Amino acid sequence: MATVRILGLAALLVVSSAQAQQHDHAAMMAAAPSSCKEATLACADKVTPFFAADSSLWVAWSANGRVAVQHSKDQGHTFDAPMFVNPQAEKLDAGADSRPQIVVDGAGKIVVAYTLAVGADFAGKVMIARSSADRKDFDPPKPLTKNTASQRFVAFALDPSGEVFATWIDKRNLVAAAMAKQKYEGAALAFAWSNAEKDFAVTRIAQDNTCECCRIGVAFAGPHKPVVMWRNMYPGGVRDHAVMTFGDSKPGPVYRVAVDDWKIDACPHQGPSLSVGAGGTYHASWFTDGRARQGLFYARSTDGGRSFSTPMAVGDNTRQPTRPFVLANGGSVWMAWKEFDGEESVVNIMQSRDDGVTWSKPKVHARTTDASDHPLLTAKNADVYLSWATLKEGYRLMTVGNTP
Image 1 (cartoon, rainbow, N blue to C red):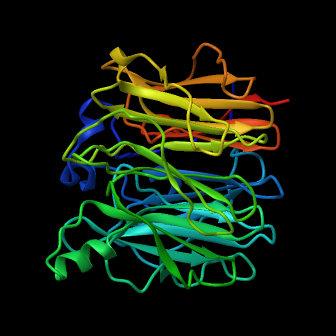
Image 2 (image 1 turned 60 degrees about the vertical axis):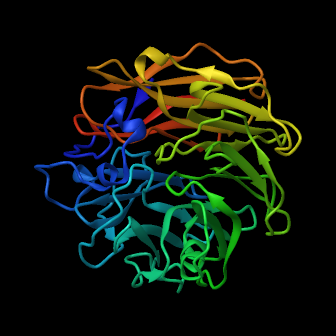
Image 3 (image 1 turned 90 degrees about the vertical axis):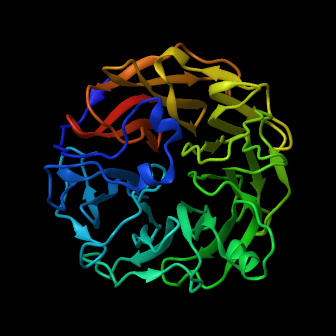
């Protein structure tokens, strides 16, 4: 395992524990005490990586109310000075599944999204910022949409065509239903398109009655064909995962990934992960505590999400497995997740060389005895990396392997 130079980190919000899997909203929105009061990468609570077309690394991070972007030409060994996205500290959404989003298009234009905590009932407001022409700073952030209902858990992805696809959890239809004194369960899955020069002018609802508090998995089955995986709401208060493939930028049918039968009148704060392989196979990973199965699971679909393989259990349930992330790259598929034994958190990684049919045994690639962010996987050409920020060790970009 190759590891780049470690950067200091003073505080992270996410603790790997059994309780972290089912915290209520108030607990997830409350920031943990921190002795690190600076707006620096060393104090960042969440770090999101992105490899640009020129193979350089960009990271978007949040710390003490500020959101910033930094650039590295040597795979994270050193970073340029930060470019701050918001001009002053703001009250950011501190939810466990909420984090800054970043894409860099082929022309080098940077687009960042982050979420403010606003009002009551754990409402959010997604803000968008674009880099200036010389990429030395950012234009003033703007709201993603003029709609004043809550938006949270935004996910960004760069379409093969070069446009930016955004999707998030939106409560506009919940607000409208309340005003009309009608019943409405959960929230909605919303989406919008943009390029680096234009705003997300039109925002639409792709699916009503979704779970209101989990991250969204996004991948692409081709140009203007994003695939979205989210925690949906089914009859009887069941919150299982669903997948949707867009066609010509328009929402397609909704398919259920697995019948986990997780009936819960609360927020799991455990969103899924999704990746699409070069051959078109959908790779899905998620957490559930349903009546049918409990823990982390992986499944694959070879028919565009219409059906998925029997879920494969992942990790050791005695060590509280959590936060799965899956990435298809070249001829391989990789999966990372966290486990906690009461004293130490580790990130396990396993690899499949046959499109997810069989998998290697898990190997520990990183560990910490303190709080940590979610483990993320990213790739540059054939090389696959683990991106992980921890309170004790700081931000690390670690090589975990390469693909044929």
